[in-house]
Amino acid sequence: MNHKELISKLALRTNLPKTEVEALLDATSIIVKEQLLEGKIIGIQSFGSFEVRKKEERLSVHPATQIRTLIPPKLVVNFKQSNILKDKLNEIKL
Image 1 (tube, rainbow, N blue to C red):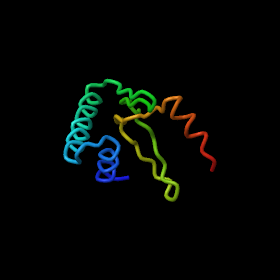
Image 2 (cartoon, rainbow, N blue to C red):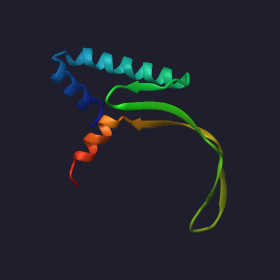
Image 3 (cartoon, one colour):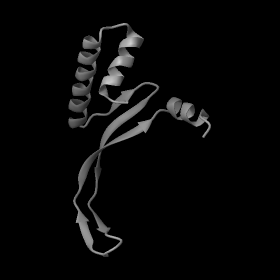
Image 4 (tube, one colour):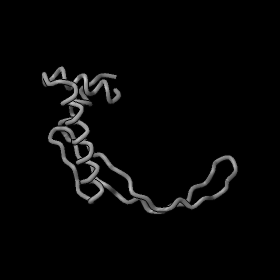
């Protein structure tokens, strides 16, 4: 699902104009980014939580050439699903 599809589905569910939905979605995105940049955890009930974690530097080995490369530390966004979402996903038959 891309940005436009998400806006369309939200507009249908909320009976709001697409322009308002787009403004709300953009504002939500900005707020989430700001909070993550401040190091705060974003929790969405029944969905999950987002937090910034630091990945330590590590040594990587290219499998074909066996050349070793040092990968520097970096910050990544981690998502932890809620138990409710986890249970719903596990109900789906593959």
